[in-house]
Amino acid sequence: MAVAISAALLSASDPQPVQVAITGTTAGQMFEVRGTAADGSEWEIPGGVGTSTGGQILLIDNRAPLNSVVTYVAVVAGDSYTSTVVTIDYDGVAVVQTLDGQTVVEVEIASVTEPRKGAPRANVFEIAGRSDPAVRLDVPGSYEYSWELETVGADSDVLLAILRTGRPIVRRTVIGMRDLQTVVLGVVTGWADELTSDGLHTWRRWSLTVREIADPEPSKPLVAYTWNDFDAAMDSRTWDDFDDLFDTWAEFDAADWAQY
Image (cartoon, rainbow, N blue to C red; front, side, top):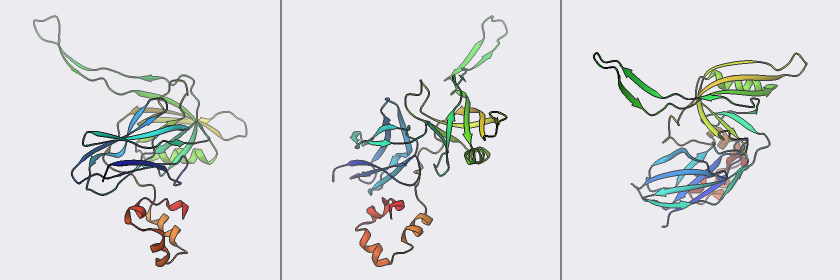
């Protein structure tokens, strides 16, 4: 069976996550899956590095840039396979979300400059009898960002809840917003917030200090649905109805439960 990769939008959330399915691999084959966007950016998707067990490989990508045409490429045993394209439509300009994508909040980008800073990693050791020191060098550290974001109404409560988890976050933006990174994973090292004026509205501005990180669990696949979603979809159906819906377990595994 030839290797094939497909991509499909799910209805689990807004923005829609992408379900990437790889078929035709054999047990023991190494695979790597990456996403590519219309601006040329690339990223590894959660669970996108691993070893096949011989069955269908299902992955969920919830970190693609917004309002972008996205394609996925799987490298299996040294050969590349490309999916059809999908488009991540979204009405807003940016979101902040948890790594698993289960909590997402729309935000506005308030900063016009988005300052960031990096630093080399070097240790200098003074040596007696020498004017020049010994130096130990390493690759530079990742960026530390200063983000200015705005939320309104209930969205402010959602963003605060995300921040108070203390866990890494993801910021996704539309393509073409100056030269901003469209997808950044980071840990928040501090924040402050205030209402944007003394008027009657509830727009709140957030100042976040964020250190960029890599995916802390790159080999862990994400899920778009839970058993509660399955229960809700099957609540009015019988087991005979269930049997009529799916011919194989692969179809069951790939089901978009929001559509049932």
